[in-house]
Image 1 (tube, rainbow, N blue to C red):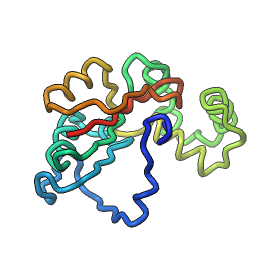
Image 2: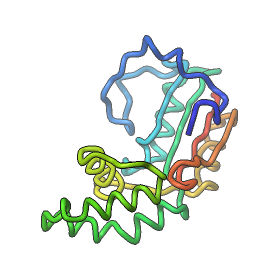
Image 3: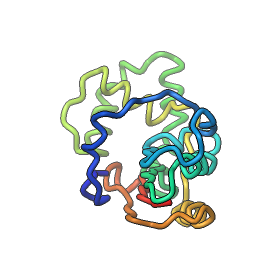
Amino acid sequence: ISDIELGIEINYLQHTTLVNADATNLRRFKDNFFNTVLCLGVAHHTPNPKQVLNECYRICNNGGKVLFAVYRKHSFYYYDYILLKKTVKLIFRIRFERLFFPLFRLWFKLLYGLGFLDDKTLLSSVTDRYLSPVVNFIRQEELEYWIKQLSFNFVNYTIGYTSRKSVIAVLIEK
């Protein structure tokens, strides 16, 4: 999902400090602390994606914006994950992953249209896609309901075209 699709510019983040924290409990930050909150590729890897959105709301100041993205339920990636995760986990458990690199490369070329992936990038892509300990898929209506509960205003909304429309991204304003 590009910044152009969402209608925002993110080049102003050049002076940003990154902090490692628990996305479901950001108590180290005061209420209404940030002008902009980015939560991309995080919430769907937590046990409670809704709580992550709640925390984004809490730490965002009035008039501030939150860019929030999660995996979309009933998308291509959802079915891909459901169908292949057990097989990929077995391949890794018996330590045969290197034998399957040509097949993984072909699959990722079909999925993303990517050219040749080096071993490190391929391994990272496969493990992120199929071996993450927590993966949640959110229905579009469910995400919209969470947003309305928090009284966010929709600024922009898109279903990402990466991974075959498998990501929902919203730009919302408090």
